Image 1: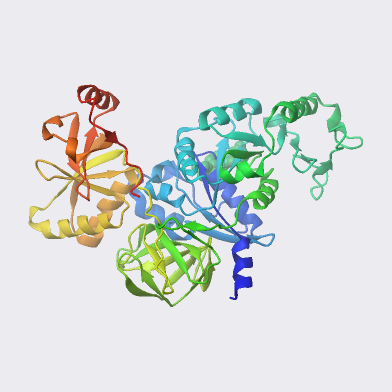
Image 2 (image 1 turned 180 degrees about the vertical axis):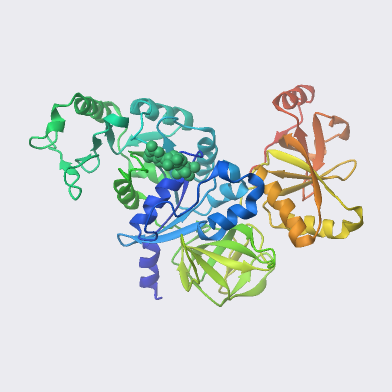
Length: 529
Ligand code: GDP
């Protein structure tokens, strides 16, 4: 690719993740998007029925049956001249640091909200990470075909709970059984829910009156008049559409619709493609920006996944391309070790097939077969100029377990497995001060199960995990530390770098500690940089 081709290829890319609370409709909307992209031919093929049907311990089976591990972790398709990469962020059952880190690899996010439920806890958590990155966030208010909450209430809640301006791009005309259509302010048209002619679901709006042009029975309905009043109110007293604020993640365009009945999804996708950003310059650790069209290839590993096949120990490292052009078989430098690697075996990700990727540019994700070279956060690059991206933030673990080897005779493989798996960076290891016990910390329960499974399969080490429950991890300045400060309610441990921290039983214990030692500074240490 010459410079002009590279520039136009990068400009076409739109890379995003869908964030939502479980059951809000993320899978359903993803499927609709894939249908538009022609990747799948019928809905219901991305995943089998979820939750309930699979117990968490069936992780292996889940992976096999859904085929999610690799194939739907990243979905790529073309639509209206754009190349779209959707990165999957698993819901509660599979919730993990991977979910958070995936958000480090996208250029924007789509937040799906159930109109009957409003903002739910998981959405809030994930939103916070998007906020931290300052990326644009687009909102889809889903399940309009069911009775939900008042649209105005939903907007207010969104603004208050998430501290972001909401700008409705369209407005529902009715809801549930009464759903008639969407008043689309942005495109100046009304989209009918049950059009008489499927090919022409749109009615143009007269810009002067704001009414549907000409005669239409809908104009006589009170539901339509009510929507019109709300639209009027919003245009007079609501927020101004502001692409600048959208780009900074300070304003979210809000779309109403119903993923299940494929209503409002197309309009959403098309508006999204208009306003969502193409890959931009990436900040390097030095603070300098690296252009996505810089000729040398660079990227970083944001996720590592173990091979689901127990006979193959290899793993897949997910790399977000940041600049240049990725070619299969290219030689790269691994920044951390300064070693040269040949990337001969790579995969591209689609919804229902896994194909070898030939080239990829900024915004694309490539999966590299890995035999243990990579760690999460690693930078790889070609060219003579060294490149290093900032380390990825570590998300403070919330759940902890104490780990021991079941068979004391097998300590060697136990220690080896612990060391290597922890190095991948998906789970945190701590050692207690007094007894040097192993404690693992993670964001979600699934990570412990994956860890246990891999210890057995890859290191032939049966481990016993003793749940310690939720704890609040707070780092403490070593100069201020006195080991006597530790008690049963605040366990003193060391992290992998040797830094001391307390694991507080609960908020009460933390408050008690702060009162007793008002001068001791406790930090959450979200970022390692
Ligand atoms: P996820 O957990 O966010 O991926 O949610 P799913 O896409 O699996 O949807 C959860 C449930 O809500 C499923 O039973 C869907 O069929 C249903 N659902 C999703 N979108 C809609 C919608 O627009 N309307 C209605 N009525 N149900 C929906």
